[in-house]
Length: 342
Image (tube, rainbow, N blue to C red):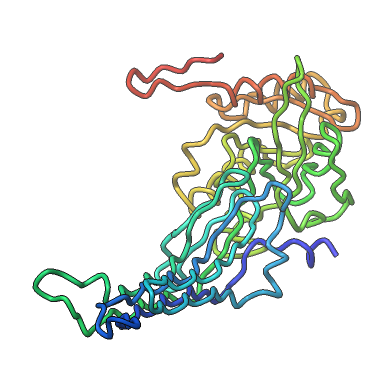
């Protein structure tokens, strides 16, 4: 059910409305059979509009509405009457949604805020009626403009989860257990790989009524950048996270190698991901004594802050929240190359 109800990628056919034609009409009155041109303009064709909705978490509702067709504008008419505008189609999408052209892959629109509206595919402009072209030298124009055509084509709507912190790790690293411990989220937890098939979000309560959002993302495997495992379906979501928290279980055979494999998968997918802030947590640390922790610390990268945690005993969770909050509120002065922490 979890897999069926979470849709983060959909292909839709979109068509904006055609503009109405301008009217070529001449006024005739009881006392003046040639009172002059009075053809009105055609109405604009309907737009295809994207609107952000913070209550949505998936693109599931678009699965049954794959043809998004806006209404054509109405033709102009006599007595300088402008045609009615075509009815817009408004598509409500979750925050973090991108709209792309299928053929070029170009990002045409991006929704990041609740209530944000973007005209994704504009409707065709209505044509001018003959009254518009009347002038001192052309008092009876016998022409009007046709309406401009709408735009159409296959488009891609893609959701990339918005969260402050993304949990990165191999399957069964303890990400879901950690999320259920430090937030009110209730992800599926089981002792086998790929328990989590879709991103799970939770809010972490911090000191002084502060909070931040953390996402448990599907487990990554070596070769994910080539589409293996959950592949690109997982990797696209971490592009939104400001901080990436790598989880390596305490019983790993080689903690540093596991970390390097994870980082390599991110780099192969998108080198820009290496510019994000990395933090490292050794999960299931209740099985370690101080000597083993010291040995593991010695093999970890020096430039990546790390912490030992246990979601079962709550060991290190307060310290983890502290370093996450610090990382999220660290400002970098790019001109001077200086980091400043609020």
